[in-house]
Amino acid sequence: MNDLEAKKAHQTDKDSKAAYSVVCRNIVGGLPFGVDSVFQVHTRLHYYSAVPKLLWDVPVERKIKHIWFNGADTVQQVFCVMADTTCESSIAPVLLAPGEWSVDAVEGRRLLSSRQFKVEPARE
Picture 1 (spheres, rainbow, N blue to C red):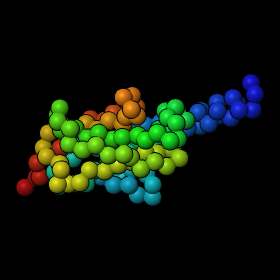
Picture 2: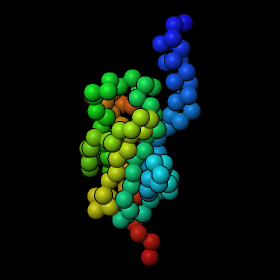
Picture 3: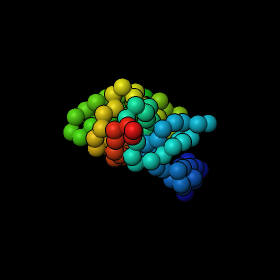
Picture 4: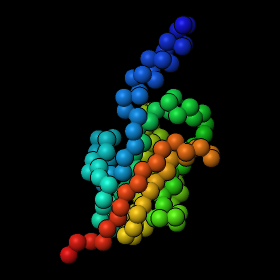
């Protein structure tokens, strides 16, 4: 194994410990806060993917898009904000409606990660 292969193996092993994605209410200090699978309407939600670019095998010049769905309806498509080991986007509270939601991270036509969650009416 040459130096480059060893470095890639070490980086993949190190990064694979944090390879996950979540839907949350906030990002605090660069980390997800308020992770859940059920949210109330009128809440800003974030999709946080801690999947390293190396693990995704996405060229640096390519962009990763987050697609937000309510059921089968596409509500929002945005390019995520990339950092070394994370990709994050959010959806405005005015776009949320009660229903079964999902958000996908895609590069071109390739699905990188996906999360499902529920949005419920505000509690009285």
